[in-house]
Image (cartoon, rainbow, N blue to C red; front, side, top):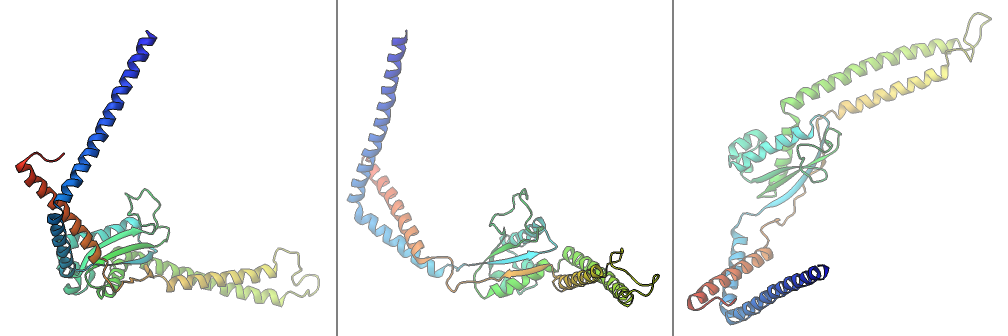
Length: 301
């Protein structure tokens, strides 16, 4: 039984091997015949390719150019989900081809809105948040990117200001910015009061550092240590400076890197169009030639 089983397996392997050889042999023969057919129709295919390349050149000069640049910003108020939704809303208006509404949202001229082709939100690692399973980079006060596609590089300056204003001055962000400012001012008021009280305490301690008999004055080693009090005064002053910096930088949106458009458009590219349209018309011409040849005889495969 074992010998019979072994023999069957060897036969099966030979069959599989032969099938594989036949398939590759058939493919190779088809390739050779196709090359011979291309050689036969080379003039026709060459002319077709030249026409396609010429079409690619023509389209390069008549197509609307696309300039791409990225704005990098950070937000201390808005999270990823909110920023993504806001930018996506703008992109939907672009897709719906309603430049009037886009201009209204961004508070720009309709002419400038018509030049905007696409706007994308990107996390700093260039990944669009996937229902935000990853850490929220904006909530962690990390930057994010806004990638814009426009027809004219002159639009980038207008668009940049409009996007910052759009994210900064929406109702949600404005309310939280005002709350933040108010909290900072209240904390500053409290710190200033503590600093004044501490200054008064320092004067009292300074005037009583020298012992005056057995009942008056302070003696080192007692619970009140004048050095710690002076250190605490410095700490409070530093806290107040930090709050003052926070108040100055209380804007919701901070621009880290501005749009930096190139002088040459990102698309269409002349060489790319020549290759794509030249190769495309070559394949189209080959299909037509094979179809025509099939009317006379079987396709050479």
